[in-house]
Amino acid sequence: MNMKIRKIINIYAFSFVAILALVSCSEEIDLNLRSADPEVVIEGVVTDSTRGNFVKLSYTTDYYDKGETPMISDALVKVFSDGEEYLLSEVDPGFYTNPSLDGNVGKQYRLEVVHEEVMHESEGYMRDVVEVDSVTVEETDLAGNLYYRFEVHYTDPADERNYYKIEQFVNGESTGDIMLHKDDTNDGMATNYPVYYDEIEIGDHVEFELQHISEDVYDYFKAVQSISEGNPSSPGNPPAMFGTDALGYFSVQAVSRGGIVLE
Image 1 (cartoon, rainbow, N blue to C red):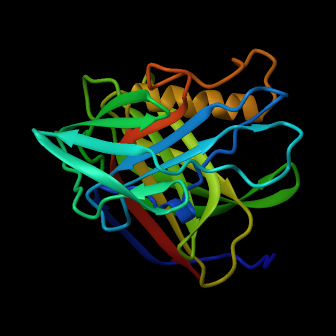
Image 2: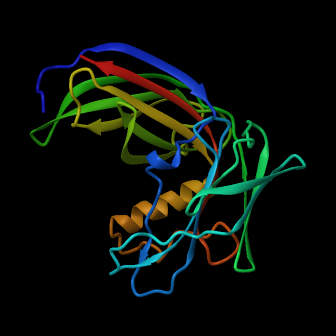
């Protein structure tokens, strides 16, 4: 790693309601269960961004099976909002989308997935965008190792419970890192969320996406993190969101971004 001190040469922030396209989603989770019967996994996203609304359908795999994740084709997938119905078409195995589906802040969305005569349903409300005000960075030493301490600056809306997921990108590619935060200690306050990272080169563009999520989506990813870390107190599976045995999530969320270029 280049050890020279980096100077911020560009700081910017902009906002839009969005979520990553499937190819770069770090929340794309492979759920491996020990010698368990396959379960349906639903990963659904609604956004007003051209980066894509989608539903991905797959099966869980056995813990010992290192093969490809089996995808689910020929399901009936629909999203409903304000009396409108959107049929999602399968464009790749297990991957369903509809380019006419636009997400809007302040609207409710309902997902229906019918597979093998079982209906899986979930709802989500698109919350307001919480703006990233800026991103700053400095070098810091942690246990003798040099890291970069980024801070994502934003102001939490007051007098309401808010839940966030922060994702990191370097040169437009997701690093696969997810940070979760809730405002139980910073309600209505200016917040500087710290992120430590060490794989940065001169000229790299580092970006953070602040996603304003629902409590149930927060709980889902919190459980996934706990399970992946091998926490003995973790539940066997993440909490269900579809009223059936299906695993996964339906995320309807407002997103803002901020980033820097280092030299």
